[in-house]
Length: 274
Image (cartoon, rainbow, N blue to C red; front, side, top):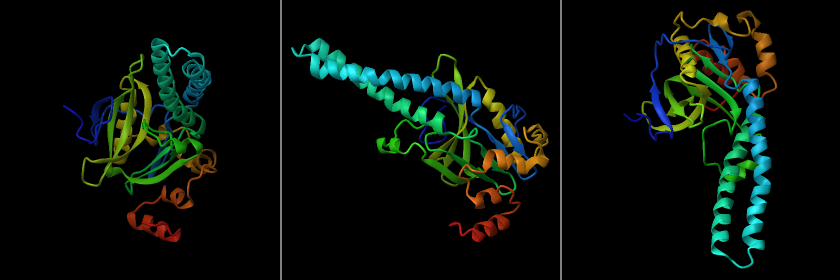
């Protein structure tokens, strides 16, 4: 059975159900949690270093490969031999496509800050994201955005419009990623997506999906005390993880909003367009 969310993501494995889920664990991704909101990181420092190294090596190798293929095609193939022309053309196209994929990956690793935390407020039903524009599963990017490596996405979403989907990344290690499909309200029509938990082995990331679902419905299986920063250290959490990362002031204040009216007042205070 295909995904009920359209358009369906390439590599789709299955849709993740919302609601109470007994397969649950925040593992080491839960940074902070209190009675109003929780914050989970989506990229550990070790993963960031590893992928930065891999993408950087690929980028360094691809540049001379492209130059070599171009030279072979346009300079050294003076006799216009069909075999050399065909092989060098295929190699050049392959290298160009590969570097088109590598550059966003390199940007994602280099410019994703402090684990790219995602904030879930269970009392207002809002989700807050502040991340690199390249922290995604997109394949097609306007080449002009490569000139803006620091481009970011800072948005507020409704939890009701976010739906989990598991994706296979076709690596030799059978890695699975969970993403949040952003749908038009009340529909299964996808208008955006958010990387929820990238590149995990097997169903590991589903444990975190289960924990977030339990947290959002105030289930006791979502234990806030397992966060890295204790509940009474919110100021320290914000100082070390949130401050200086470009989060709007109204959004930081909205993390702790307890009602829709309180959230509306915060937005009016900062003149945020609804």
